[in-house]
Length: 204
Image (cartoon, rainbow, N blue to C red; front, side, top):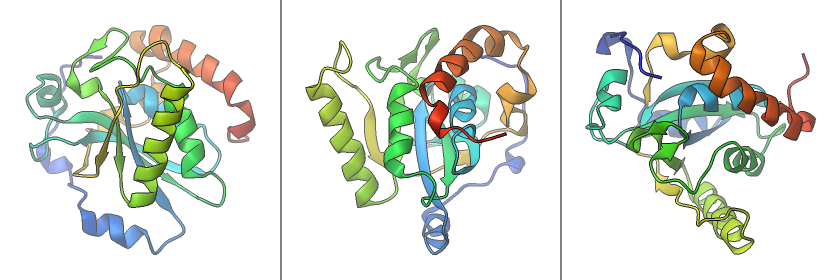
């Protein structure tokens, strides 16, 4: 999913922990997941009933306001992640975790299919102890049950930072369904996902 587009860092705003705390007083909660290409992750979670917004971005690294090209150079420490805002009265963090585990391969280190590099690592950035405990619990139970042929390598880390991706990444699959990567890589995953989670999808 390499693109030769450069967008100014001025278009990005860092989300810090104060913003996370302020959202806790509202009836909206937030989750941060990385499971490979954020075009895919965005498309999955946009379809879940109770999810209010999904925004692609970069997180977990050491460089402020990274560009897509810098992240792809593997020098920033960032992963492609999505910020998911949801209504906990309609969908729980547990249910979002179920979608997370079932929509990518959590056993491949720094890789999802042909997307290779640390920016494509499987990771959950937790915002509080409850999210941490639930993520760790499901990871242990999935390994115990041998749900996958190999051990899960998903990292479960405290939230560090989040930088929104460039504007052209927003709503990418829905806006560009005929683009090569969308057509040949994402669409088959979406079709499989919608069959598996049809009871949790938004009603159109």
